[in-house]
Image 1: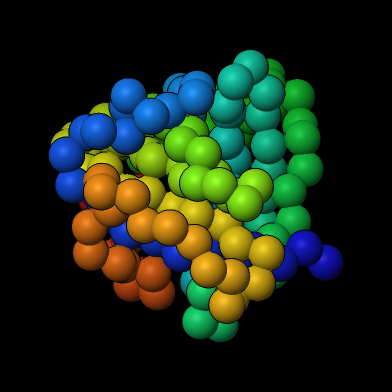
Image 2: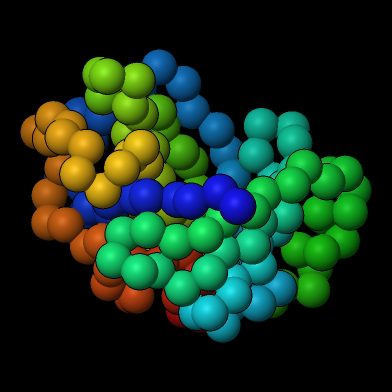
Length: 149
């Protein structure tokens, strides 16, 4: 079983764009938004994934992700209702860590959120100037909540 340990922050300004080493266009939807078991379909970088996540315990939760055919993912997205569309920028954070900065286009244009996945809950990391208020654990900023409008 894989564990996801993640901290999430609102973003201030757009200085992350100049620091980004790459970016991806992402389309994702949810087959289940139940907080105990979210099931996400995502197309990113020409590949598609089905991901199951459990409820957060602090900043940690269980996560299983499987690559699936892109054609299947497109059909599944048609069943999801609202599809999140965002651009993800990748900014190196040092110590092998990466900031993933998501600029939302649909359904929350203008919202920009940064996440950093950590190997343990107490892993130290540098906070760059584009990082604002921490929203880890705030369900309003879970992608599975953002699809609800």
